[in-house]
Image (cartoon, rainbow, N blue to C red):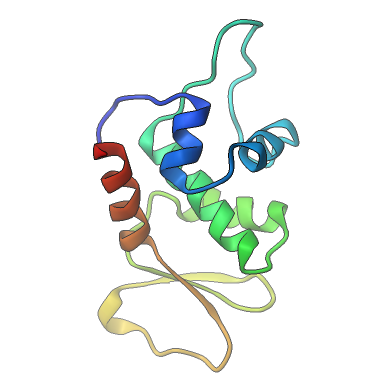
Length: 122
């Protein structure tokens, strides 16, 4: 991904998250962001937008924001399929090697990354 940066509003749009929800996650420090002085807007790199999108997807699937953020911190730079079990354990698999358990949450990180890149290009 490119080294360009995006405003909070653009980051929310690209990540597919409501700006108000992103602001809440930032204010609660669920998603780390630099504390900037008054009048200096936050800027987000594409890898940070992937983290935002991953936290959003995982919370929409029922994970607590802090658990989702911990998983996103660990895996936002990874490629493959992210499997999250009901207890919040997470594992990364290549697309070809997955043996799906009975009840899991799967996040296709490559698909999520492509979605972010498409939105950046738009």
